[in-house]
Image (cartoon, rainbow, N blue to C red; front, top):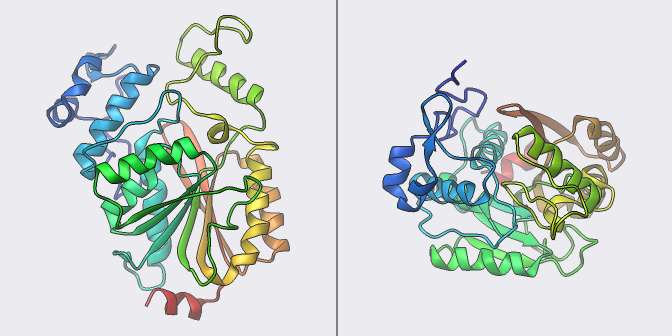
Length: 316
């Protein structure tokens, strides 16, 4: 059966609900042209198992839809699917709109992106879509150097600031400074609990794409998936559950400095532990927002320590 022309599960404001118009994308970014070919249905597409193809597609999407003229990432760093990343931001905008019934736009909305990465996708989309200001935090100095090059090349220094987290065991400490406040924090936490687990997940995805899989230990390197990923982008000790529970516990120390703390949760089985941690802090209000992109199901968990009056004061 031929794929539908819409990705109806995406947020209504998502610019990527229609199937990619490769002719228009090539007009925007000629570098994409060599990677476009006809698929089994006779439609223009790319090889989504090829890292260079995916990067060229991202460059074209960012340029066409978000006026990002210069974007690149170092080899093997995470090259994320843009439609799903955009959805996270649109749902956060809806979360903020619940107070006044309209989405707040402009630099008065300040967002802290935990794990901004070399790709810096969330700040790029958020500044272009809503005019929000971003602080991007990461423990990887090389990733931040690349992100800073993107900031400088696109003249975004007035709306995006980058900070190195020098204490990898901390999440908000040092990133939320004394007297500083944020409207939102966001995070796409590392999913796996170890390098071996991340590599095993990569191999499963390669098999799903119908590609040959090299066993661990064969050849120079294990297979790298189309979207890549460095250590801290893919795994941490204890995986997603441990990371998010630690985030919840640490957020209590900054309860008055942020309106909504939020994170993606990829694995539904991790929700009970996260909810227990939120009850123990305790959070005043917790929301779970379901998200779907293709076959992938995920959700945003958001929590706040502030009451409704405080929310209205912050959002004006």
